Length: 475
Image (cartoon, rainbow, N blue to C red; front, side):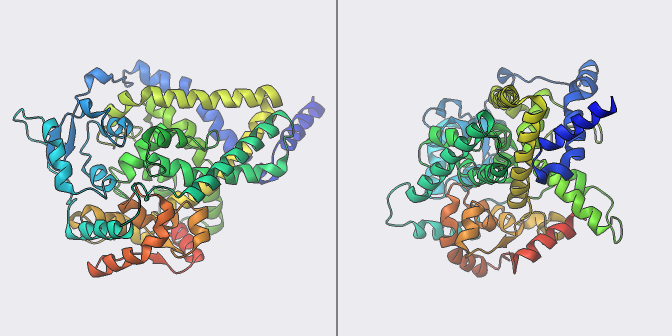
């Protein structure tokens, strides 16, 4: 018996890429909890009547923009950005999305186009929670228009050379995945596949999710799935990132990006609370599961209305229109989640269950570490957190975007390329519909506008300071 057990353990470790060995106990706990959750969480909540299944017909067709209510359902097919973004904004005050996605068209012209969709039933819309149209944002948009002046329409999307390079990465990515699952299963390819997963996330998925990749909405939508199967659930990403984080960055009761770091950020803080070595280990373990969490746990939790037992809150209930999002995007999330599970079944068929799962977890760990570093560290800094910014409620929309971000190496083409432009989060947050590949060239003008209006632009002096700022804040 003991010999068989030792043999099984040896086979397990033989199935793991060495990088993954220290992560194994943590991942076993996470996967076990996820596998048991239908019995330990979902069914008990169902019996208590706490699970809800909103329907589309129960959600009013209503969008609030600059203090007015509109019914944009009939505009789905005509909207230049496609129906997807309208579906994701339904039931909310989407003024922030409206402003940040329409950099090159005059605000008055756009609002005039919306007049025919206004709901005039005598019911007042909720007042805007912040100032969206201010001299600072107007000057930023003027700077962006000047930058692309004289260029062909759509030149603010991804450049053809970079799109070709990203397409080459996509082909290489799937070639390596197929050959490793069906033929090789070479551990030497694990770090490369993990990196390519991040590269496609930063350069194709992220731009695509903001309609910044190309001018055609359905192609943006299709290529936002480029990082599958080691990328995030795109429908869940739209809820978390596009409609929440980009409008309310670092605002605790609205920005669900912070929700993912609750296990770290809500721990008791103070000098000597946690040994710094243990803290580093905790952060690395936690960040290793970021992609798996967003690809499986988030869509699963949103779909079933999972209620976190530690605080009694349903997943993402801090989002204003979460009921509408669960109704509108349910089948999209379910289809993506189903495809992810089918991929793992395919891997298990070719490699065996244990061997296949271990191989995939090794890749997910590497892609998760890349993802967590480039997407989270910029905002989780002491100087960028809302509690540390004076007069936060008095800041306009654009000022919040700038003050909640920490940039690094803005002039570096290499870092801009590898990070998908996320080393310059402040300007990206102001212009999400402009491909991140243009941000480095726009940054000097961005600095000048910030300086003109006295808006502090936070730039880390070095990569080490950037990382240490995140570690200090999280502890």
